[in-house]
Image 1: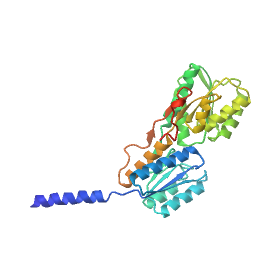
Image 2 (image 1 turned 120 degrees about the horizontal axis):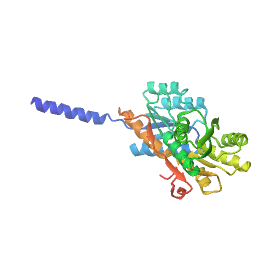
Image 3 (image 1 turned 120 degrees about the vertical axis):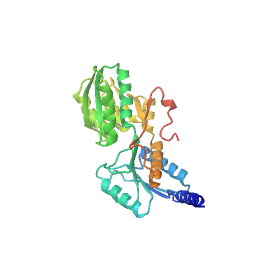
Image 4 (image 1 turned 60 degrees about the vertical axis):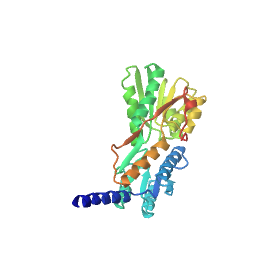
Length: 308
């Protein structure tokens, strides 16, 4: 009899454990700009996973338009609305920490996506070190291990820092490669890439290779080279954005980009967040999504960010 009672107790406990599994009913997503296809793909990935988990899940995806105060307000609104999970791409990885703490104090886990955020419960991002390595190894191979190279840098966030680190991992091993510049911040934009590259082209008579930390930067660098009639260089990048596909297929100096998968990244981040809601911490943090190299040779087979 005692054995039967114990078994019954175990069964009841197991049923109760199953019953306590929490659904994802509402998720708030705060991203840089919904006018940027990268963030749109992130929003779509989060939505896909949320709906896969619970078809009735409500997804609120907003752009904070690179205004940190606006992102703070969005997070507070997500908390007030009773969201179960918050995904965010931080406007500032350190300054966002108080808002993350407020969410966690209210019982809402926060998962950082694409860029790490201080205090987040988990981070899901591209393996940006690998992305930098892929793009710069392609550059080295095309140059035959010799030449003058510039790295057009960007904002001091984890993704950019890791891409530059990956590039250095490759370039620093090449005795025939001379890095002319690696500290100019083009702000991750086309206009910034144009302005920084104009200065570098004026400063240096011969540049054989350029690594831009993202596609807009590299597209701006290519435009600067065209304006100054400098055609001697090869340009590589990171992102795999729609604009880079056109650049790889067109008349540009850009020859490769290490492509991210924002849809899959946000899908994974949402899956991780659901696990955290149910008491399951990720086995590793950050979780790194591998990039793939898109070149002039294989761009026709590239599905892009909307390939899902």
